[in-house]
Image (cartoon, rainbow, N blue to C red; front, side, top):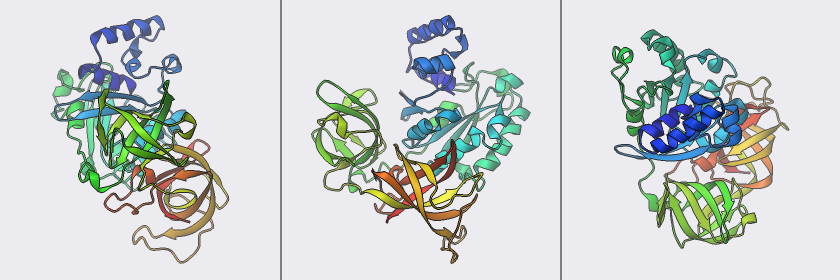
Length: 416
């Protein structure tokens, strides 16, 4: 996955040949010569030694029609919490499927299925699926078909629920660089007349950029660091626009401060708006008021901060039913907290959306229910439908995990 993204950045000119030669030399010295492209994004010592992505890495490049921000998220099961912090900020998802070990990732408990369900639960409706390492099978069409048929059935089926028109499949080789920006592989060209990976990215639809000023500014904080005189944060703008000199409030600390500088796509700018990933927002505020998971809001229209709320959730493939009193890990935008299921309010009919008359005692796979969740520390969120014209935003999306597995996902629906 990181090799594919690294090779993509090299082909798009976002990484110079000089930098690539440096990565090739350093990776060979560590006995990991095949990881050179991955090192474009896997910058940490632990990541390079273990050969896996641990933290979300942010890079930018340009296509013919778009400025693109890559959030390279971990694929390993140990780092799903980090993956969620990246996916919740995305507009679309790129899933990299390994031909060689497809069965291992696709079986029950495999990461391929879990990641597909997670990105859909986070509200992403556009999905590009890169079928990687097809060169191992000599670029045979039969090998490609044997993977996309069960994969497509799951992606568009009831467990994930993607619209087939919003899913694009692309055969690639990350290491060889085939069909990333061009297709020069004779065996692949015999049967593949479709688009390249860059074409697929360039054709993604951009939504939510209209009527920017109709909604108040809000953004969830994904990273925090301190300079000599200010606190800097990275954010994905969830709604509205932000300008240098504007007053904002940091929630749940309820601290008002002024924006001193904005940096987006590696350049200083005066204004950012909904959909922008902002590399750095420089704030005139003390460091202890700001945390990963805090929310920056317009002063005149702050979002609510609560310790109890209700969520409408879909229960995934669980070993044990979800019951009242159970403790789970709550992932709410970039915020992570321990929560308690304090009440099973009702089960909803999947067809009609109406409440079932019988009160539930436990929730099992496939059920849609409204539950009451309690957290010890106040969290900032946006209830579904509370902002007209936006529907559910990243600030209303809820993921529940237990013992390293995702057990349910949904949206905050009302205050308790």
